[in-house]
Image 1 (cartoon, rainbow, N blue to C red):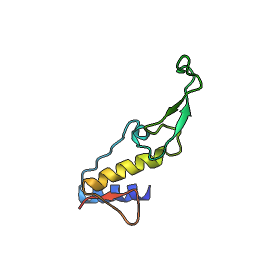
Image 2: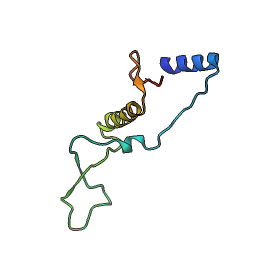
Image 3: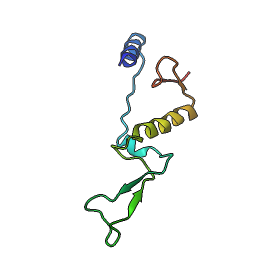
Image 4: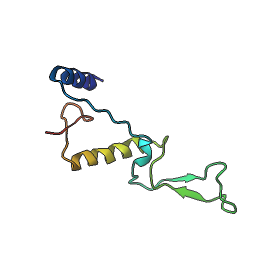
Amino acid sequence: MPTVRVILALSTAQGWKVFQLDVKNAFLNGDLDVEIYMNQSKGFVAKGKASFVCKLNKSLYGLKQAPRAWYKKISGYFKDIGFSKCFSDSNLYVLN
């Protein structure tokens, strides 16, 4: 929150435009870098394959790797388009 407050104060003082982005289902867009398997969900069990499991290709909400997978993906995107990570706050990216 301190970073957000500083950015809002600077933008007000300098007359900058501020944009906000909310990525719907963000954690569902993270790519997994390890193999993770889960039991079939109740109500969606394939007939005759009740003992089978599902291999996840993408992260799910509630999966402990989901936040890390999403951060890795969005961080890579920001770097690809020219942003650099701020030294004092690793969640702040700057474009010069």
